[in-house]
Length: 313
Ligand code: ZN
Image (cartoon, rainbow, N blue to C red):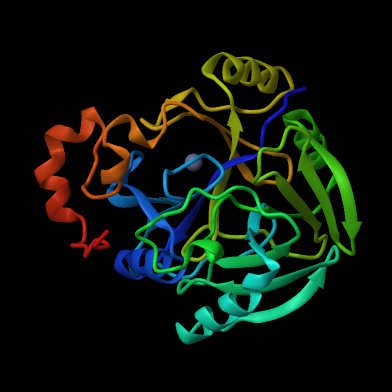
């Protein structure tokens, strides 16, 4: 068994890139910490959003597919992404989202906490959960959201599956323990959680599998401390009968991928080297970064990728 500290990042499919960028930076107040392309499909942007310094556990990433149809949320997917907020921030966020034309549901109570729900402009479901104690924030000074209300590390994600048992075994192997149950929802928390440590498993035997397109999550990545431990995990996954990808160099982390038994695509990503590996912290997300093997195609890619108005800060 391993001891993941929690979620590293969540990656979703968005629609129009400018709408996606504007909503995450101007409305949610996140920082664009890296502007790059999908290494497996370089004609598509890959946006990484995060806190003021782009720490693992705060990273929300998107592949914008302009013009693509809406995906169907369903089993075998992450079906919501939650951020913790202070109780004093509930009214602030309800009003801020409503002012941006977002339809906000709640607050509703879950595990004794108040939960606001909404979707981004392309249908991706988010929750803001008012918690007693928030994790430390790395403030983003360029954010339109005042410091006390800013979003930092995720609270966690919810996965939807037809049957819970085998998914629970993989979470246990990763370092999660079962900490609660409410209705269809069983809550797991990373034993070594450093924030972003919650995974709720929703058992929905009658739901259809999801389809991947705009407004759905592509995968969730969990943290591993270094490449050696990642290699041990890869070997164990093989031994347990999973199909595991080779190690992929994502420039900012190294990754392996496998599908857990409930159908959700899991990634295991190293904390290192991080987003400052090719631009200083002050300049994160201010230019298109390409991996070395795509640099020769920069001009061609820049002509294919839709033009973007980047945030001013
Ligand atoms: Zn990923």
